[in-house]
Length: 414
Ligand SMILES: [Zn+2]
Ligand SMILES: [Zn+2]
Image 1 (cartoon, rainbow, N blue to C red):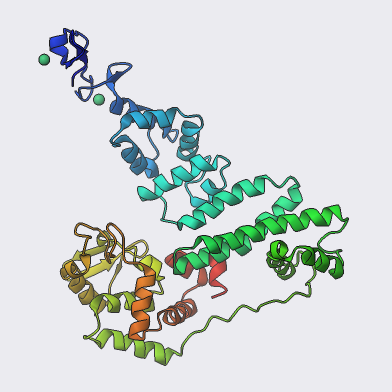
Image 2: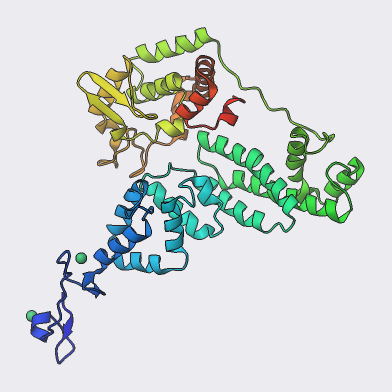
């Protein structure tokens, strides 16, 4: 480090410059800028974080330790200190540490300081405290928080919030499970929420309510600006189904019943996957995990090497907690995959993903696998719904839901 300047303005070291002040941190010995109390920036940052993340017992909340480590070990402790000094940061962190705000996607999504809360969610995902979530879904939640806050009428706000939560968020979550959401899909939900609020405002101004408004008036409101207002029909449909309002005569597309295949066919498919040695091992293993554990592809592709534990002859997989032993022949196939993983690595030489993709640091995309399965003639989604049904019939629904990481309300519909 060259903290001094000689006569010509050239940077020179401390001894040459005759500076007496110590530039060594009194705790870690690091040579650098000292902030108050002769501590370096990193040690100061560590102390600040330890205080801010205190759960009330004088120690940082255990669940948040990975966050503390990540923030503390940043390359730029100076930026870390700047971030902490910004208004609201320490308050939000302390609220998480003390439990005032739950450490969950939903709680943070509802936080009024959405920019800060979203950044924190991303951090919590990076350090493994929160599960990864679809980026577009996160953006939608963030948008929804501000949108709802803009609805002045409390009753309207509550109704639109119910609609957004039970109809739109549920739809988006379900879709995100199959493949990453596109901005277009999220735009549809945004328009539905916007037009739901617009419809309620118009009803108020015209002296009607959802229940009393004559069908003809409703139709002419829609007809006046169909392109913009059409998304409101999703809200009307939902309101009709949830008995918020009497059913309206609207073209109602029925939900297709989830299709399943006969048990015999399902078992024939599993048998084919077990025995088809000429098919690629990776595809066979992924398909079997889908068919036997009813896991979505998006979940399986996010398995890491560390989610597999080998203890003697046994192979364990962490799909939930605790890790479950893999039955034969899945155990042998998993061992084989680990031995031959190099074949699939490509630019992913040091990756931790169990099923690495073509892009650096990324797992294989569910869509890529879906294409592979349709080429091989494996009805993967049909197989998964069938597996889900079979699991549902043998285990109480909430248990299955927690095992699969889906909400009980969704299970009932599958
Ligand atoms: Zn010198
Ligand atoms: Zn230090």
